[in-house]
Structures are given as C-alpha cells and as structure tokens.
Length: 333
Image 1 (tube, rainbow, N blue to C red):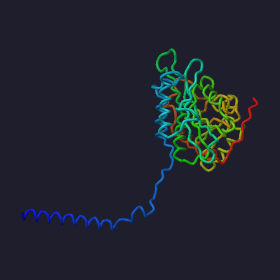
Image 2 (tube, rainbow, N blue to C red):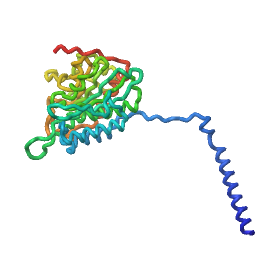
Image 3 (spheres, one colour):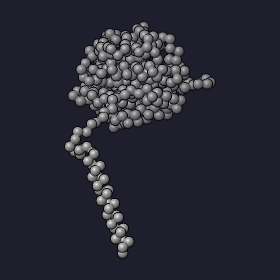
Image 4 (spheres, rainbow, N blue to C red):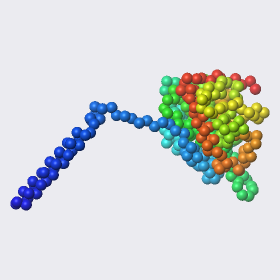
C-alpha cells in the first residue's frame, strides 16, 4: 500500500512540473496568432533554366519520333503538354471539355492543345501565346539517325509556351485572359492555327505572341531577338519600350526576302486583323540544322532559350496587364 502511495505522489509531482514548464514556456511565446498579424511570404515567379531544359529534352527526344500528326510520338507529346497545363492550373478553352481542340485533316485526326488563364478586369479580351508542337516525323529511308527531332523547330517555342504559362499563372496579374495554344500541323501549311481561327471573334483578340526557333543566338548578337512583320502594327514598338533598361533588344525581321511573317502560325490570326507576330532568334540563313535530323536538343543553347523567354515575358507585360493595346494588322498583300 505504501508503494502505491509513493508512486501516486511521484506521478503527481511530475505532472505538476510539466504543467509549470508548459506555463513558463508560454510566457516566452508571442501572443496568440488570433490577435497578431502573420507575415506571409510570397514566391516571386521564376522562369527556370533547369525546367526549360527538362521540357526541351523531353519534347525533342527520340521517344517523340519527330512529332508527326497522327503518330504515337505526337500523342506522347500531346499528353506531356496536357499534363503540364493541368499541373499549372490552366482552364479549358471555350466549350471544350479537355485541352484538345480536335479535328480531322486529310484523313488524319489531330488536335490543337489549348489552355486558358482567365483575366480579371478585361476577361473578355484575349492574348494568344503560341507555338507549334508538330514536326516532320521520321525519314522513310536511310541509315543512322532518321528522326527529325525538331528541337529548335519548334520544341523551343513549346518550351516557351509552357514556361510563360507557369510564369503568368504564378504572377497572377493578367487583366486580360491568356490563351496558350500549341498548334498542330504547322509544317503541313499552318493547318492547326487556321482551324483555330475559323470560329473566333477576332475583335476580342488583342494580340498574338508566337514563338518559333528561339534556341540559338541570332546574327543580331547576344541578348537579342527579332520579330516578324515589325512594321505591320506597333506591337514591336511596345515590346521595345518595355525592354528598355533590361539589356535585351528586339529587332525587326532581318530576313525580309523570306516572307517569314506569313510562314508561321501568327499569320492565321494576322489575316483576321489580330496584331499577331513571331519572335525568333535563329540565324536561319546559315542554320545547318533547319528541317534536318540534326535539329536536336544538344545543338541548342538553353541560356539563349531562357533569356528569350524572359525577354518575351517582360516585353509583353503591358499588353498582358491591359495597359497597352497594339494597333490592328491590315493585310493587303
């Protein structure tokens, strides 16, 4: 009986000591969070070169077998882009029930991949950020490397679309809605972008930001890019203004004889009056990899690709935020 009493007294003293220590500890703590302001740390949006490299090497891998519409490789690329849209939190476009805008062309089932970041005060005004995710597939004959990986043309542009989608989603200050589109079958004659443009109200689309071949340093030098159709609207001048003081410069297209304004997906929207232009960096007049099986991820400079995506983000900022509206394009030729 005495043993039980001693044990009880010991336990009581231990519990009292714990209670006292707990009370003393509380004296050293700040007031309840119910009555104090809690500091919230916000994460600044980042365009990460490591993520850019991951996207590039995935989309331009042999596993994608050249991303020809209607092939298993193209389906893998489509699924990769869809998963990224979902991870970022983009919404479906219009009445679509998935990220795919499906259609058929010359007996081939294909799809544009579209995700939307809704705007705030100007929700019904749209800015398109685009690139094409298709390429040329596999050579029908020959030995050795037979896969047209299309790293620069245009996995680099798709990398830009994904990176900008994540950047704008994190930033969260887009007053206008942003429509991110990876167009299919550009290499077949702008098929995907033409299909997209068929049913839109072009008057609601205030700008088109198209990205193509942005993974190599241009002949205009480091930290530069060039823009197709520079004189067809004041879109380029807005970008130049926003880039002032950054050390990055935007130039008009240095290849007027190639008629590049009409050779990429921006043209499908531009023909509807939308100030839609293509950013590029590649010196295409001397590029040995254009439409060759040698267009592989290892031939690109991820530093150039990262710098270009950052410059596009900064350059288009005032358009995304609804502060600037480019003049419309008038096509007479």
